[in-house]
Amino acid sequence: MGLFAALSNSISGASAQSLALNNISGNIANTQTAGFKTTETHFADLLAQTEGGTQPAGGVGSSTRNTLNIQGTVQSTGVSTNLAISGNGYFIVRENNGTTDSPDFTGETGYTRRGDFAPDASGYLTNGAGYYLFAGPSATTPVQVPTGANTLSSLAVSPAGTLTGTAADGSPVALGSLTLAQFGLQDNLTSLDGGTYVANGRSGTPSYGLNGATLTPGSVEQSNAGISDQFSKMIETQQAYTANTKVMSTTDQMLQDAIAMYT
Image (tube, rainbow, N blue to C red):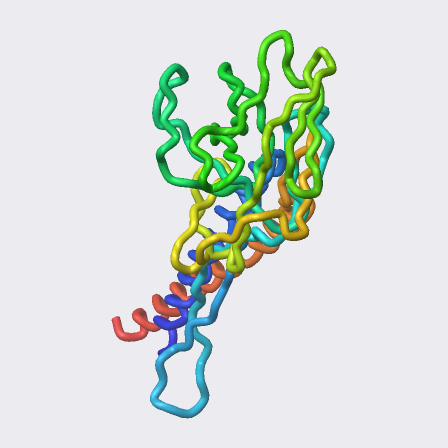
């Protein structure tokens, strides 16, 4: 123990604060990204090895965790095909692994809160990250709406998830029923890009339905990252990082003083 342990502790502290700053920078960058969930930094103390007696302070370990259980603000967009979830649940989405003319939706099933859906050239609903909306786990093609002159002017969702559109000419358009995927351990989902997640052994398999959640058409769930909150965390992180570098420089000077005593 002693000076070398102090140096090791301060290095682990600076490294942990570097990870925190990386997460904060990503959160700030995505404050305007629909459905974005912040990534928080979790710190855990690392006890130093000792032969007995008083336990000296050790270093720190760091890890990241999602905030999938924190709801973002639902904001009206005026875009009829946008959808926002209030409550527990995720849209079922897949990527197009083919082309526009020959789509292929046989890839991995993803789950997202990002509901800024809009029709592509074929009328399939896709969000801003490029993921296509599916009505349920057994659906083989994405939700499709009319395009061209008779595009949707509005969209309604019943409490049971039934989608009904109103075309530009005023006629009703039945679009089927939409279900959500819900997880008991959602914080364990594996992150992909574009605010999309996949299930794993720790998250468990999803159940399907609304089960108390509601869908609001013409709206999207905003990012749950707040600028003021992230700036406060950034200032705290900067101060902690600077303090750790001060410990490094002080320890280095003390080591040099100790070496000089024997030279």
